[in-house]
Image (cartoon, rainbow, N blue to C red; front, side):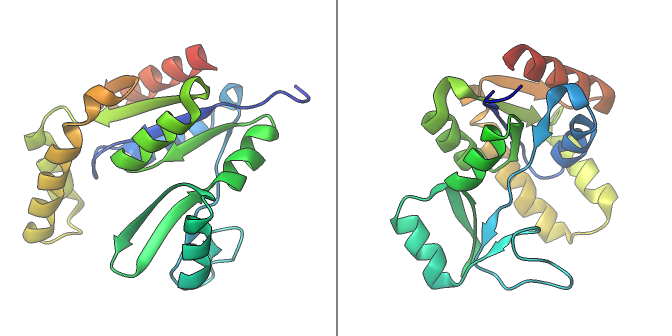
Length: 190
């Protein structure tokens, strides 16, 4: 195990497809040796959030300086004035500890990371069975307005158009099957 470098597993999916649930199942599998990177953000801490544990909280200026210096493997302005990203130093920290880094990122970030790390990374797109099922799942959460759900479904259709650019596509029709499929793909990859 000593000196063994971990690999990078990139998961991407439209909102409501079950990606976070799949990741929470995979994390429990000790054979996969999964680790998380701590993301950086330009927003202020909320509640009990701790710098370096929940996020690296950077000022807008620090964030921009790191962007300019090429220190991010991916970053995005999620809301006007609020950016999130993954620092290359975090990717190194996790993989050099011998863990495999699991990353939960948007479609564009996923494709950029795959391009950067090549064969050291696998990109897996989690696909809903179809857009109607995704709509039902989002509505059953009862957390968003119909307008927000419509925007999410439009974005989902756009994101699903990138699925063919990923190393693998897993359809989340039944959670157990999707978790098993993703786990098998990761095991073959590592």
